[in-house]
Length: 185
Image 1 (cartoon, rainbow, N blue to C red):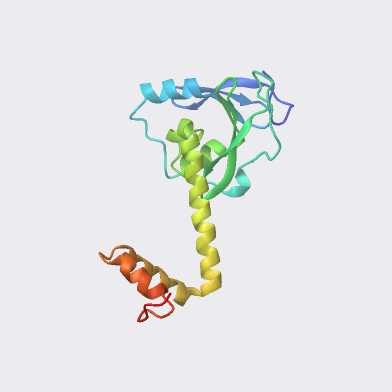
Image 2: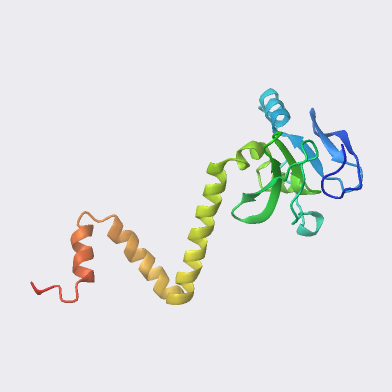
């Protein structure tokens, strides 16, 4: 198989972790992993400890921005974010169940504590959680910018108090009423 990323190298079988065989590009060092092989390896090595003391610098990681073609089927692969805190994306071929990891992305997954979750990253649930986290972060930044840090902190404390209060609906009505002491609307 030829490399899907650099289009120069050949994918050769190599060991990525103890007993875990993948295809690595002879030129760009990217890795082609079949999820089925990963799941089987993970099942047979359930107590495998991914080294979490890895330090990866952003400059050591390649992240292909262009759409990649599956080296097995020739179809376009989808990109999946690995986490809400990291913008790197891995490429997935649903046609064959294969993942392309650019050079350094396996080490990135290990440093983020996600190497054992490679197959989970590709699920709708995982991707929806990333989207939800990003949305919450964006709103938080907007509120902080609009209210200022002191007012935002007070508003969050008040909101937390109100949500957990037994009379929260009455308290909301009181706070939001233009004149809470009037029978008029």
